[in-house]
Length: 216
Ligand code: 3PG
Image 1: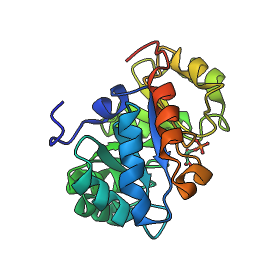
Image 2: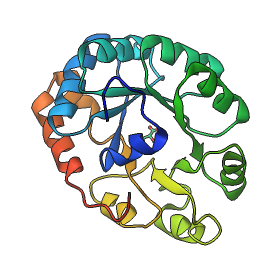
Image 3: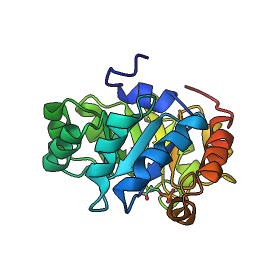
Image 4: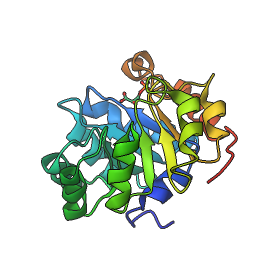
């Protein structure tokens, strides 16, 4: 994929086995962190809109790290989507699903990977044309057995489980035929980001990039 082009949700999911969920307190951390992840083989980066610095972080990565594809996480409404797109985000991830957040992302020109946790939410998202979904919070809402149960009625949906995934359980999720990738914050531990321990983050990313996948 050409890096100047905005990816589809499926391209965001297939690029690597793990989408890092990133929480940044300071804009100055964004560029070295993004470079560290890219050096480890992880290019699709979800920067959550959870901190005052988030939009500045997205902007800095979009401008200064051409090999990364920065997206916005925790997008909850049209305002978030518009602000993220203006800052340079190239895709959006939401913690839940509403028609309004979906419309907001379409208006902002961003592919959306929407969060779901129930059959009704999957049905609503599918009705609106979304077949690649984030399962959130995955471990807390039923984990691997839930994804296995969904293979029957929702066999055409592909998931990115996020929430409670770690290096110990990631492989179990990735082995499922309806899982393309997982999301998680373990690639960017708060203490490593604070200390600027970028080598550790590159090592965690490289380890994540090597995780085997059952399907894409
Ligand atoms: C989140 O919303 O913080 C993400 O789902 C990451 O969850 P995790 O910290 O359990 O990986």
